[in-house]
Amino acid sequence: MPGETSGLQRDLEVIRRRGWLFVPFAVLGVLAAVFIGAISGEATAVATMTLDTTVHDLVIGGDRGLRIFEAQAMTSDPAFKQKVLEAIGDPDFDYARFSVSLFPISVGDGISRGTLTVSIADPSKAEAERYRAAFVQVFEREYTQPDGLFRTRFVERRREVARQAEAAYQAAYARLAQAVQGKGLDLELLIETRGDTNPAVLATGERLALERQLAEARGALEALNGASAAAAAAIASAVVGQPVAAGDASAVLTAQVAALESAIRAFDASSPALAEQVLDSETQALLNEVRGLRQVRDSAFVYLGNAQIAVGSAVSRVETSYSFSGGLTGSLVGRVAVALAVTVVFGLIAIYTVEWLSQARRSSGA
Image (tube, rainbow, N blue to C red):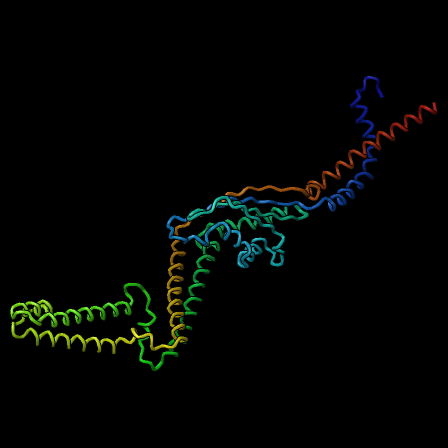
């Protein structure tokens, strides 16, 4: 080799002459890459989703079902799982491989924020990222869209509660109707409980009005004793509301008392709803149950309406960040890197070792 040859040129010449030594170590590198990739562990793909839902048209408690906890619960819904499997393209995929955790940030009337983290491990980094992307894609749509599971599950739960309340009310009503059959009671009046429109309340008020008029007529009739003719006429006129002749005051008030007493008797006969005492204790308990179930039924349908208003005005947002950990040598790039490293490092060691031994042998022979 010429004396002016540089060290780099000498190294390149050595590698060129003994490059065949790379071959066995290339085979060793491939075997090492396969072995290390098998024991290197799985790659874990992680998505961190910051969730925010604001309900603008809010009734009291109307968003109890659109909060961060329900967003996490949605990921356990069979319909959500099926959508994820369809996005992955493998109906036999084990959905339980996904790990989902929730960290609430703020929860209050009309506002719900938190962080939902989903992770999945796989020997292949690319596959782990593909599974993660399928989950995030499905979640973002179902959480933010008007027809997504986050909203429809809320409304359907409220609708199912209303249906159950209606069924319970109708069943109890049928038992009560059977219990009071033939007793001459107006069942609708008995069970009505809705405030100022309650017929039983109105009926009671009307009866009290008749009793008040009767008391006034009786009192006026007693006041005629010892009163002058003019005073008697004035008293009778005030009670009946029209002029009464002085000589007719007693007769008019007597007739008024009789008419009012007859009206009260007729009213009692035509308003049996006011006489719950005719019911035995068991039927009375059933009546109270029906009244309560009617209120529950009405409230359930109000809550259903509130839920529909809430989902219509709710706005949901998602901000997602991605990360991964582990499994680098399990990827194709990682395996190639291991194979090249073994080939180059051990190949160079072998080349220079053989070259050194060769020079040592020539020196000892000289």
